[in-house]
Length: 151
Image 1 (cartoon, one colour):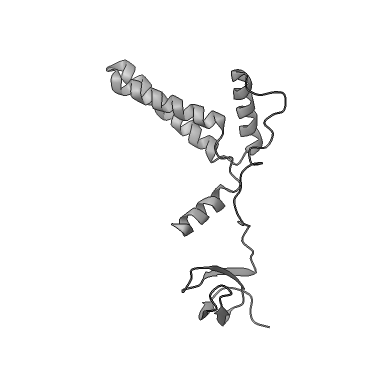
Image 2: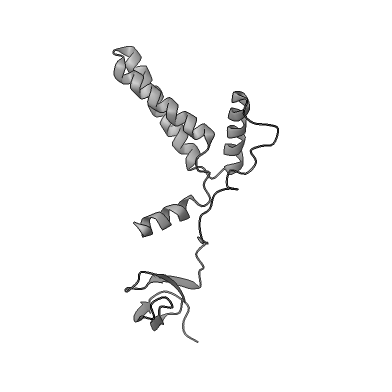
């Protein structure tokens, strides 16, 4: 599960994520789905289609890389509700923490210690290497197929 969460956080690092408009759209999605289940006939079909349109738009906003545009949409939504001042919402990521996730370095390779599962960063040099884990002091061998040749 840890590897999945790490990859998810890394994937979401430059995405917009959730905000107040996203949660309002999710509430609207649930309401329209309930109305779809309660009603019958043409009205039910309309609410079914509307609910999926709302869901798709909300997910599009969450995974969007155009952070500035999504932030402006959220500000307009908050102004519509009367909850935002002139410049209250500027950066949606100011209170978010992604840990120590950084961009992968092309001259480094990340390997996991087989004993304690710690992620280690080693130089990307082609060949066989012995690596010592600083956490548990376990030594293990790795082989790097693609990388810079040994000098």
